[in-house]
Amino acid sequence: MIYKVKNCIMYDGSRKGLLFTVENGVSRIISEIPDGCEVENIDANGALLFPAFTDIGAKCYDKCRENSESLETASAAATVGGYRRIVTLGGDCFGDGRVVTAKNVSDGAKSGIVYGFYGDGDIYDTLSTIKENDALYISAGIKDTANGGFARGIASKMSGTVGFSRYDECGELSKLLFAAYETGARVHVMAIGCKEALEMVKSAKKAGAAVTVGVSPFHLALTENDVAFYGANCKLLPPLRSPRDREALREGLFDGSIDTVSSLHTPLSRSEKAGVNGARYGLCSIETTLPVLMTYLQELEEKPRRIGEIMALKPSEIIGEGFSLREGQSADFVLVDPSSELVISSNTLKSKCSNTPFLGQTLLGCNLRLYLNGK
Image 1: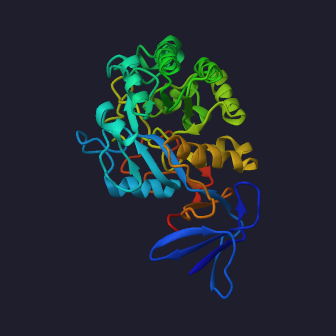
Image 2: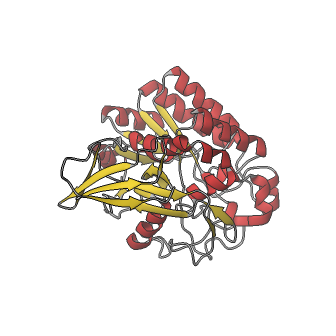
Image 3: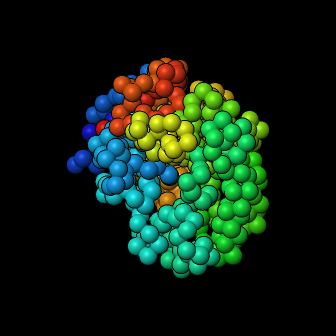
């Protein structure tokens, strides 16, 4: 059977729609309708059509925590968010087709993707191993410590915590970037949170380091000033910083300095987010990443090509898939109504947890339908 998605606006600006076949349960994008073939139309009702998304940097499952996502809730949340692939942190072990996992340097290098936080050993030696195995090192770019979650300054004072200084963030990042430059290893930093970190990444790229970088929707939408309103639901790594930093990250998103948007999805229970000082860092976000971008950066609606690049094409390229809506590839795509609205609540979220600052807010672009393999 041949299917035609009509009445849609392609993310790259064309209005040609999308043609694909489904044979023996496998879809394939085609460019023309063969003579004599029956066509079934899918009316998109004027929606934007994107390649299905890929996320680098979710933390869905932890076997030591009963409140972490199950395979069912993670898949449901990813489907609502429009994701075909989630590259999860090293503790995740779903083994599902939508989830790519890696354990450590020795095992992960064999599969081509390795995660690492500082404390995993000498970063130079680690990246040398990554280079030898032609693998990809994915890093948080910041040391994971008990003091984490808020920026040092107004946010840490409000919470009574030590907090992260800019030195804490950029000092560790500088080691990683220089080691990447020296070894030639491929490195992806999941998310950066300040202007100085972005400038360092730009310099590393200019020098020839094989480095890519992401940013979270929270850093594009919120600042450290929001801690007063949302408390522990603003606690994440890297921490939220000033409006100046937010504007720099937004500029980096549009000028191409930032390569991807990472959900940093970390579902946590109410008890884990209780209080401020002792609350764990991490936010629930894989379902709301695109709506947050469309709500807080409405200029993106006029640049759907950029959305496709940062949420689908580039992250897929980074992990070695190179997925796009080219002829011959699987019909994995997302239809989005950018004007649709939804009030975010624990009832509307498919994730097992609802630790998000956007609870009670009305977000745009929530009317989304994901097609995987044409279905």
